[in-house]
Amino acid sequence: MAGKFVITKDRRGEFRFKLVASNGQTIAISEGYTTKAACVNGIDSVRKNAPGAAVEDDTLAAV
Image 1 (cartoon, one colour):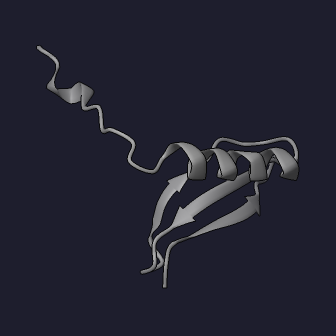
Image 2 (cartoon, helix red, strand yellow):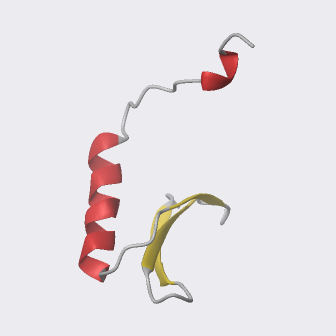
């Protein structure tokens, strides 16, 4: 089974999505959205922009 997006509503009434791996572990949680449509747009944006996204590791910066 592939991962999935799960839309929830938080205590403040905002919509959020979680990206859940096939093993049931939550990989990421979105910001809060005031409308469900905006939340769905956030999911669409992740789908569109994330494939092949580079990883930038800011922890390697000089101390």
